[in-house]
Length: 349
Image (cartoon, rainbow, N blue to C red; front, side):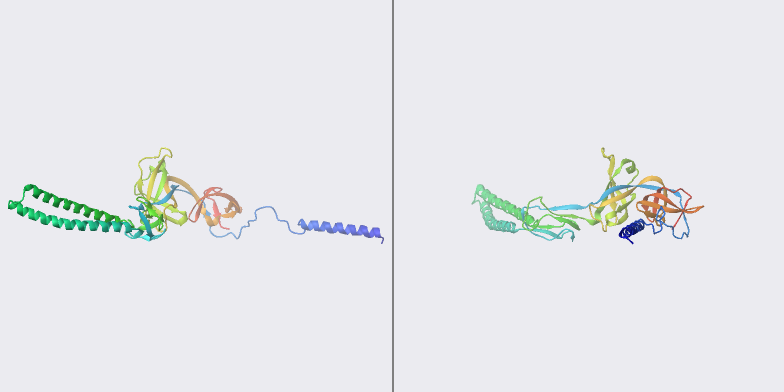
């Protein structure tokens, strides 16, 4: 075979090989997948679920927040340096527990000075009383004029008044010393501390904030048409998603005036069981809103294909797939807003 013939044969073989590779990569040697959903029904069996609509009470979800009814901001009543802080955020305290200690050395020195002054007054007062006693005796014997007796009596009365003033001054200083021991006014939990040792506390400056966990409530702003249907003592279902809590709360307060801008009423719900809740958490109350038509199916009958939802519906021709639109969830059931009609039977794949 000449060289030209070998070259032509090699070229033909190369083209055939490249063609086979292209056919292989295009899937020519494998079974084709027919277009459609890659969802195959399993063995259909068991009892189907008959779709039906019911009329039930409707509820509107109203956002709110958990708040503490009993909350206090402990402040200083005197000007002094913070000596120590006995609590931190999150600590539980009882009424009367020590929270903050303030420096009391200046007050103690002032107290000692006033006590010494009163002791000096006591000595002078004792002498004045003896002088007044002698003046009374001399006056009764006619050996002392009335003017001299009045001077002795006035001196005694002045010392008595001065001693009384010093006594009240002592009580004032002792009260100020008691203010250096800042104690908890209520039993509760510490929210935050605003002072550290070495800080200068002045009258009115905040030191510690507290709240009572047993006084939690839910504050809401409810639009006027819903609020008009609520009464004091009504039970309202409340959900706190972050705490995974759901409970009944009692309507404890309804402000008898609507907000002119939002046309809503401020409503307070009393939390009967506050375990696991903290002030500031988001809460959602289910306020009664008349009645509604509810159509739902068990969530276990729904298949999810990406963002699409489908079910298997029993028909005379056998099970068929049906795309549906879902709404709210209620326990093990989910609302069907479109795709199913009453009387149709949904089966489980």
